[in-house]
Length: 209
Image 1 (cartoon, rainbow, N blue to C red):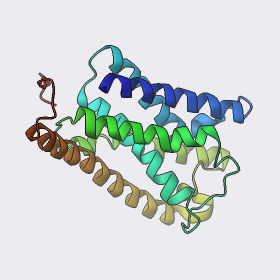
Image 2 (cartoon, rainbow, N blue to C red; image 1 turned 30 degrees about the horizontal axis):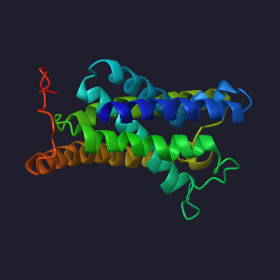
Image 3 (cartoon, rainbow, N blue to C red; image 1 turned 30 degrees about the vertical axis):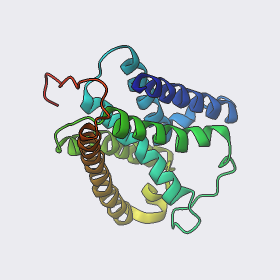
């Protein structure tokens, strides 16, 4: 079942990216968005994990990024009550459904219910490396092209102080989300193991991650 969900996650992520490119008439500028980049990451990690072992911390990182995509989109960008709401003409298209809903849900279910990995809590901090690198990329790019991929990091509208405040808030929120993925995975592992739901014995990671 785990292999099936990993394969399905990879297929949905790739299909979502392709559908987005078709909808955008082949505009590869879409790859500037965290949504698309995180979809590439989860697709690659999930696809490789179908055929060979991938370290738990890598799969956890990819899961976190996918969950960030879904949560930020639905709570901030697609939520009319949010100060960062953006009206999207493609809100109900196939690529939006796949990239912002289906893939994050599949990734979360795979990690929490099927894999239930045990990793060190401080990996939640390590996983922040990519979101922070993306922030730097978006800000540096924006300084040259004078536009930003997301309203909550738009220096033109929020100013340097405003972007700093929102960035710090997101950093804390993403760290807590990472901790939640780690903690819930362990909790479900213990509950389901006690209930006799594990059909196969777990093979501990020799690297103890």
